[in-house]
Image (tube, rainbow over all chains, first blue to last red):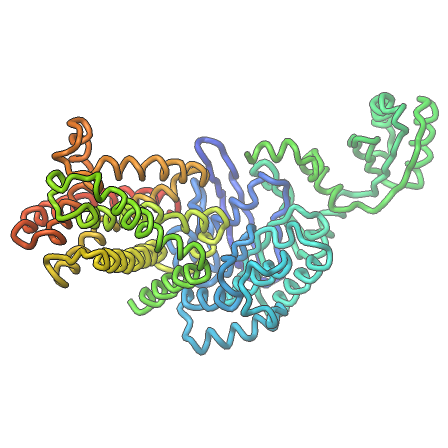
Amino acid sequence: MEQSVAIDVSKLGKTYDGVAAIQDLSFQIRTGEIFALLGPNGAGKSTTLRILITLLRPTSGQATVLGHDVVRDADHVRRLIGYVPQERAIDRFLTGREHLLLLGDLYHLSKEESLRRIAELLKLVDLEGKADQPAKTYSGGMKRKLDIACGLLPNPKILFLDEPTLGLDVQSRLRIWDYVRQLRQRGITVVMTTNYLDEADQLCDRLAIIDGGHIKALGSPTELKSGLGGDIVSVTVGSAALARVEPLAAALKGLPSIRAISAKPTGLDIRVESPEKALPAILEVANRLACPVEFIEYHRPRLDDVFVAHTGHAIREEFPAAEEEA
Amino acid sequence: MNEYRQEIAALTMRWVRRLSREKFSMLFTLIQPMLFWLIFFGNLFQRAADVQVVQAPNYISFLTAGVVVMTVLNNGLAGGVDLLFDKENGFLERLMSTPIHRTSVILSRFLFVTTVTSLQVLVILGVAFLFGVTPATGFFGVAVILLIGMLFGVGLTAISMAMAFSVKSHGDFFSVLGFLSLPMIFLSSALVPLSAMPKFMAMLAVLNPMTWAIDAIRPLILTGWADALRPLAIVLLIMVAFDALCLYGSAKAFRRAIG
């Protein structure tokens, strides 16, 4: 792979009032790829993104965007990037076209250039019909499309998307994924944060799993999944038998075909070498312990399994994570 | 320099567009001080107020200077509200992620608030004129009134913006605003001259820059240049110091918030 480096992050750290939001992050993003920072709320994704787009100063370490330091050369970085914020950062009183005209002036485009790009972008995101309506009449999906058009107006080399499909309905999500893929075809590097596993899995070329301010794993979805080795056998027990899950896990631990065991609320996820050997063994142990198996299935590793394997918890256990953020 | 002008023009235009879309709120901001303070309050106290005490032909002519400065006060203190909302909904981040000069957003706000306030002051003087109040110092006097208003307004807008950048929630912002505005008015010479105030209130009112602005504007309206020059010199000094202080403080808050 002889791809050049678009973003180089080295030992990046950010502390708020003595509490570290991110610590010692190092990674590289390649030119032309779709890269995701995947993690639960409060993991440090947005902090990292904000440092890269020059809105936050890191407390330690450094980052360069296309060779320009995000602190010392912030103005230069701002000229090369587009940003689509997480919140619907829309002025409800302005029309879609007025948003884009405003940004055209902030990027110092000439009037003609601005109008040309606006016409093209409105067509791309399919907002031509609503362009002259105030944004307060827009649906969530339309606001998101306007957001993306705003991010693309400067013709950026790198587009940053903060949780691009958060809270959108399925159709709008697929639509946004489609745009993002089109951007890659045009040669734009896309950097996004997400806490949706399927989004990271289906859309991204590479991703970094970030949790508690640290990078836990980095690679393409396929690499990460095959890196786990083996398949996942998922055992669900009857609710009356939940107390037997622990002894079952203990008894399975020593078996040769079993690699790792993690508990889930309804039973166990068991990482195995080959399901043909492991399945009978698991059933046999469950039988011996009189632990009634309600449901058993096996599947190739999914990104959820990767996430659990590297962080020790599921991405949707959101209550503790949400508290951290507050 | 051209880029700087382009940014500021576009950002200022945005505030103008917003105001023109919020017709209802525009009507309220424009009409409220005239209707409530000048017309109702001014006429209500016409007979209750002693012309010997206020030293003016009638109460409404005395009150005009006060209403002008109150308008400057309220507009200035509310000057940061739109930035507060921009901060809360992420629009400010969007603006700051573009290659604009870091001061452009703030400057556009100063420009906008100052212009709206000046127009409003002109309307207030116009309404007062309909009630028989003619500025003794003529058009030049009106220009000086606008200048004083601008100087005071800049400092107030700076305070308001600094607060918008520093508060945790907009609830905090509005409670501070509500807490500041009325006492500032009562502890000034807007409604009653200092000489007619209870001692302790007069002592506090002297510390209020608003008092000095009013006491400079009042002779411009009521008597003429001879009485106005001394308070004018004083208010210019006070306003320069006030603005310097406010701008210094708000620059710090701004740098902390945006870097």
